[in-house]
Image (cartoon, rainbow, N blue to C red; front, side, top):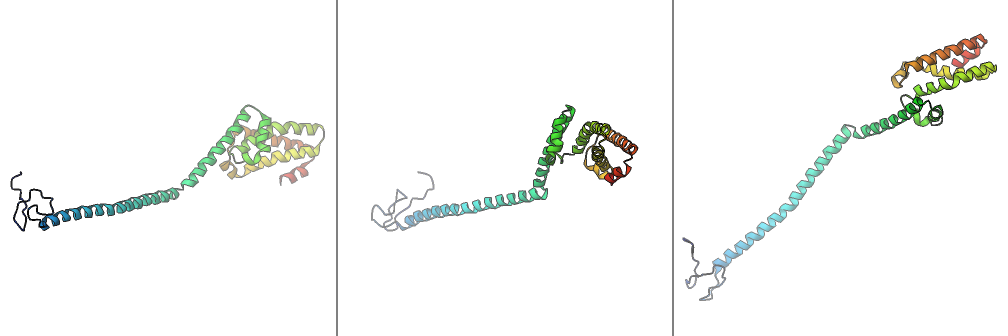
Length: 219
């Protein structure tokens, strides 16, 4: 038995109670009120503790939910503040344009003029958004139309000559707007070749006395 430990006694007969958990005196049968209350208080304390812990759970869950919603709100705000959707769209659009440019470049480098025609003419709606679309279209024009112009000249086909001249002249006239060079990519050699061809055809048409028809087309 531990030192200084108080031995409970029966308040009726004064008998020592060896078992503190007893509710009745084993000698006189009197209810051990103090001990019963002590035991009850312990049980009540245990129940109150359990209830307090149970009530704390919803509070913790509510706090977690509130913090989670706040973090999501902040992320959502930052998502639109920095225009993440717009940047994703721009990135995807840029990727598509890069793919189109690679198609055009590959066909041009291989001198696959039929494939280039398909991209530039047949699939114009898809490829016109590429920044180098007009560069390769001009290259295709220069490959295709000068020989046809000379054939029309030999055949004295004025209408065909004027149509080809108009096509190349309109392509050349686009370069008079500085915005063209700000938006589209160009190549110095192709630009020089286009200028030379338009001047050559202009000279031929003027010698044929077609100045009026020629300038009507270019107005």
